[in-house]
Image 1: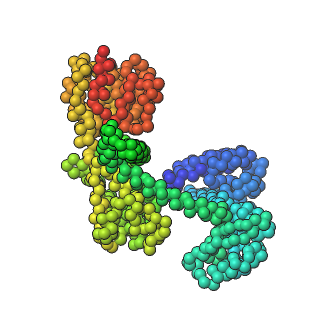
Image 2: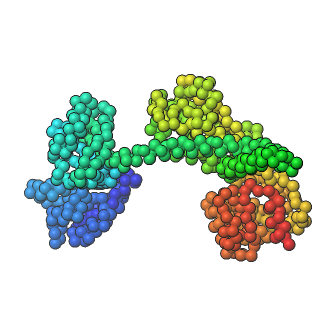
Length: 637
């Protein structure tokens, strides 16, 4: 019998018989043990403190110190470390002493079969690991109980005496363990709390619901104290107990009015946000109307009007100007953050959201089925798109919750010039009336601050935000649903290839660029995105550029620079393995005079900072091809 390699044992062997020590050490090593062999107890004691060993095998008869004394000293260093004693001079007295000193096993020489010692070693190590794990879990539990912000105590369900209490409880009530432990509950708590505990004992079983209530009392300093108390019957260890959790809600109670006011402000803020997005759409037309009114008023003021009419026209002029100012302010408020459109795989964003919600999905017994068949990439802002996907996922999770379990299927596939994402759940579904309003701001079946019949709350903004994000990406979203069957959302967004062609390939060349000089330049492009690589190849060929090299591997790019000897290098900042800045720095070390141009689709990059680090220029994606040609034209001078 041998120990599995993944369970290789770190073993300390103490034996003063050199031949037996060498023989046993070799046999154990061949059976996947990492053996450290020493000849005396003193040597072993110096090694034990390192904590590198999982089991000790020791002869009882040792020079200078017998095995039993050695065992006693080992247990003082690490009481859990298993020690297996081996002897050729067994007697009942030494066996009893070994047991008394907590030796793990007691074996007799000669060890004719290696399994005679391998089995005890394996069992000893398993026992040792379980003891360590148990201690770790116990310490972890004690740390959690000690550090939580709530007071926790356990009450014996038979005697109604307090058995344990954490430090937070003692701090909340400004008391000590001595004043609390082993005291009956009516000595610590007033009649209200005592009656609640007794009711819990009489009315609720071990699998019953928890009982929660608010309690107003005085602490040891005679200060008013509001507490939320939760009681539940539970089996702790092997005893039936009552678990009590005490939360200090004094500050929450005192801030109750402030909280209500904040809720009102929050609702108002959400309404203003929606009004702002609507204002952006009508501001242009409204300004046209104001311009007509203002123009006619000012024209009329230049005519020979009566003083009364001029006064009225002046008031109209002032009111119109105030209206124009108001529209300008509302337009500024309404301006949304424009998405940073970058060619990327929508599946990565979906998987990122699913990973973030993985624990909650498993907790709600929701199965995820993914059907990915797309090859195209899309042009989108990953942050905004992940928000839209998260909103759809949460909507589906809420729809499944009343059923207790269900499935969400996510399909991604290519259409002619777009990518379609299908979100399908097996939830409770929606009526036709609800489907018609589902993307309206503030429309919700859940209630913004109260829970519906399924214990779900919401603001009614999630799907309206999703709709706005999809529209910003020039996409579309639709919904279909059947009550008690489920709901399907279909999203379509343009494929990146089409979008990039519109922005890059179809761009007209500037009349001031000397294309003949540009065509003679040697150009190195370091870019890992397949779609951009394909498109830039077409762009370069269309412009007649022949001396260009595209390297998609950032590590190989540095070698390519040496071999190709380019006149200019374009480097994407976001690259796997080595990022663009690292490639930039490596090339600079080789030849600091070659112009290096950094490229990125990130929106928070400052061109000035890149210039300070030595970048010749910076191109933000998506870009007009003229920007690239202008840089080449400057280099060719």
